[in-house]
Length: 213
Image (cartoon, rainbow, N blue to C red; front, side, top):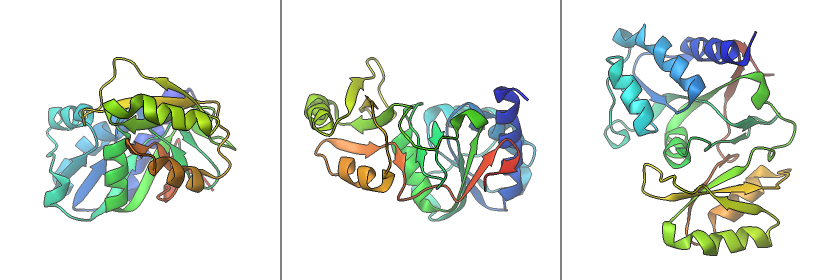
């Protein structure tokens, strides 16, 4: 099975977790397959909450209602992909620059189902550069603080998030304590959020159509 086939299988398998109500929807290539699958049962759900303008466009194109999170309260389910996933279901996310909205929706959901292909499964997080969303004027300030911590920040030049902010991609990390690093980086002045999902990891990880054990 190719990685693309595994992504499709994971996106379609996530339908097993969809109950009636409102579904949180993430961003990325694997989630796009989930959106296609969700369209086949859109009559069963009240609508969705989307983590990015890109996913909103895909959902609306398929006739799926998109709602404001402030209007719906707690979600039963959030489905999203990841750039890396470790054995404890901690994640690196943000390759698509939607990390802040993704983190907000994950925090609002009772269950977080992460859909990935096998290439995203790692023993230690950090080979994929860690995205950090920053207020634009704080880019160099935050970058200097990250260098002091042993990271190698690279500005994702030309990318502006849906929130109007910038992204630093941090290379050279071997993240053995993702919860501690998430806490530390989130405290830096000028950081909006960091693409570590460790305090709120995935509840279920689907690799293809199989749950990771």
